[in-house]
Length: 478
Image 1 (tube, rainbow, N blue to C red):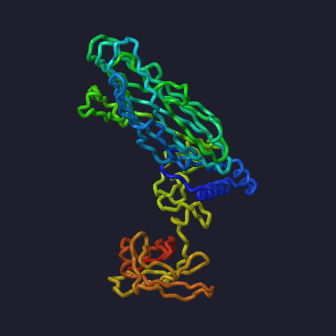
Image 2: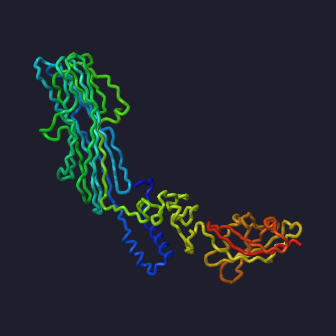
Image 3: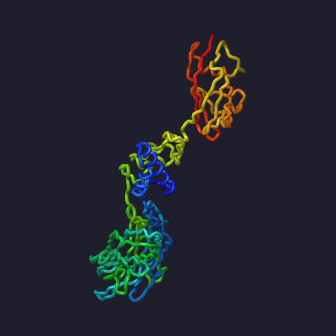
């Protein structure tokens, strides 16, 4: 779904029905009711009502810990859920994301035994809980995209080699009754191997993995839990291992906190001065999980074959892949019956293909006398009476006197009021306008004596509807 605005479904349905009716009238279908019924059945798109709500997150990681045991073992673990974005809905897709970061490090003063290994089983992980609302049993899939990015580093402070081996973040989706999909992201047996004998040697490696998973189809409202953990079961992988001695660090966004404050039994870490590359900033590190819920009942319907689905197309029956909409009424220019006037309802009372907002009502005009005396210089007080009759659609009594023009030139009513009476005895008030004779003579200044010319009066009613009336007038200059 590509557009930044979404059409209200009721308004959209009305708009589609209007377009179909107009089309049917143009091609003169004999059985219009049967045609409309067929169009409604075939063209119906069920608006999926699948949404996400009640998002919550929970940090499953072990508490922060800095401790010293045995042969100067110092270790630190801390983790945090740094971000959970709000739900975004586009068409039939609803999405949200979470971001988890953590830091792990330990330093070992290697004992004499060459096969010494520290296996650090502290847990990192978190869970995401959310509800998928599907009251109409439309059905939906859940797609999970997750990315892990971080830095593994070793610093060999003793002569034996140092190595990190990590097994991180296995996960699953639970629908409230059982685990229905296991989603694993492994950094197992990876990490950094510092196999040199030189004390003070430093190595680092950027860890980056991405995986995507799709669930089975679900129906109805359900409460889900997606969980990730370095220890999903008692026999699961360890966080990392240190073979040898020295210092091991796994950094996934968060910076270390440890400082011994002079306590010799808890020596400071020798944190390597890692200069983050432009694409490895801390805000991009950690575990990012993107969750997408997609309704199942959507069929891409494109009646006019312009590459835009009917639901998003502002002219679903007329090709217009540019979607140009000059008056921003959500009706494209190629099918808008008032291209330059905002009229989302596309109302066309007289059925002439021109919307009411830009269509002229016809006014019956009678000019008396039927000639315009332009002899010499007409006095400023001289007027030309013009009678305008009302009918069932046009109300002459509601003419806006500030909107009048004759042959596209502004004119004014000399008395600044309408003279009302029921001239034709039909029960509707008719109007007489007294237009300035001198102004009219200026408009027809290029005419010769005896010329019969067209006179077009245009204006608007107080309700905004446009009107026009035509007549002829003879010019007298002698």
